[in-house]
Amino acid sequence: MLILLGFLLQWPTVLTLLMFPILLVMYGRLAVKEEAEMRAQFGTAFDSYAKQTPRFFPRF
Image (cartoon, rainbow, N blue to C red; front, side):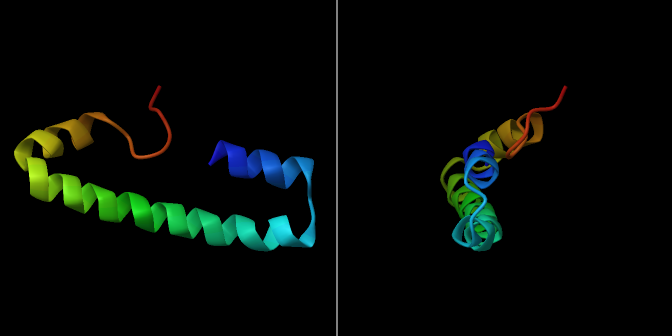
C-alpha cells in the first residue's frame, strides 16, 4: 500500500491516479480471499492469529 502511495506521490500522472484506487480494491479483495483460505486450512489457530494481527496497518 505504501509503495502504491509512493508511486502516486512521485509520479502523479493520469495512469497512477486511475490505477491507485483500482489496485487498492484489488489488494483488499485478495487479502480477504487469502484470509478465507487460511481460515479453512488452519481453523481456530488462524482466528486467534487474525485477532492479534491487523490486516494492513500495525496497531500502536
